[in-house]
Length: 381
Image 1 (cartoon, helix red, strand yellow):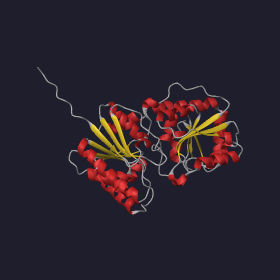
Image 2 (spheres, rainbow, N blue to C red):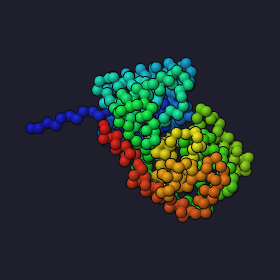
Image 3 (cartoon, rainbow, N blue to C red):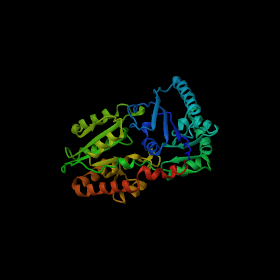
Image 4 (cartoon, one colour):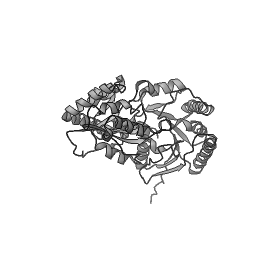
C-alpha cells in the first residue's frame, strides 16, 4: 500500500496601507494564485474616496481591512497599530510569501525580511516623484531603499520605472516589469449595438484635472448632442468638488446634458460593463505632471479589453505604443481644438473607429493580459 504525501499549504499575504481593491493588478495576481491553489490573505485599510471599491469573492481569497484614518497624530497611532496587526498575522498564519505593494508599507516589509521562512515581494504601483517633505515620508523612502535590496525581488509596471528604481535604490536583486493589463476573462466578446450618429467617451479612475482637464468639456461643446462623456470613479483629497466643477463648466457652455457621472463602481465587472457601452476611451495625462505611464496605466488596457479605441496624450511613448499600431488617436490634452480634431475624426469615421477598437481587443486577448504579464512572477514562487 502507498501513501501520498500531504502537500504543504501555499500561502501568500498581501499587505498595503490603503484599500487593495484600488489596484487592479492586486486583484488579478491574487486570482491567478488563488486559481492555482494558493491561500491568499489581504490586510489593508480603507481609502479616502475609494472606500467603495471591493474585490469580487473568491474561495481562496480573504480580505481584512481596518477603517481609513485621516491624516494627523491619530493616523500615526493608526499606522503603528496596523503594523502590529500585520506582524501578528505573519507570526500566526505563517505565509511563505509576503507581497508588499505601496511605499507606506516599505519599513514594515523590510522588517519582515528578517523573519525566517518568509520571503518578500515588493510591487511598486506608484513611484515617488517628489522629494519627501515629512519625517514620516523620509522614513518610508529609506525603507523603500532598504527593502529593494532585502526583498527577494521587486515588480514595477514599466521598463522606464524599473531602470529608475534600480538607479535610485542601488539594488542588485531581480526587478521585473509587469504591465497593468486586464485579466484575460475580462475581455468582452459580445459587443452591444451602439448608435451610429453619436460618440460616447468613457473615462474611469481618479477624477482630477490632470486626467480630465476642462479642455475636454470645451471640445465637447464643438459637437453639441453628438459627442458626450461618461465618467466613473472618485475624487481625491486634493480635488474635492471637481466633478461638480466639470458639470458646472459644461452647463455654462450649454452642454450640461453631455456629461454623465455614473458614480464610484465597487467592482471592476460593473466598471467594464459600463465601459463596453461607450465608443472611445480617454487616457489623457497633462505632460509635466506624471511619471512614465505607458504600461503602468490600466486605463488604456481596460478600454481596449472592451473594444474601445483610445484618445491618448500626444507623448512619444503613448503614440508609439497605442497610436502607431492603430489602436487610437493622440491629441494635446491642453488644447481643446486638438481634442476636438480627434473627436471629429471618430465621429466621421465610425467603421474605422470600431476596427481600431477590435484590433486592440485582440491584442489584449493574445498578449496584453495579466496572465501573460504575471507569468514571470509565477515562475519565481
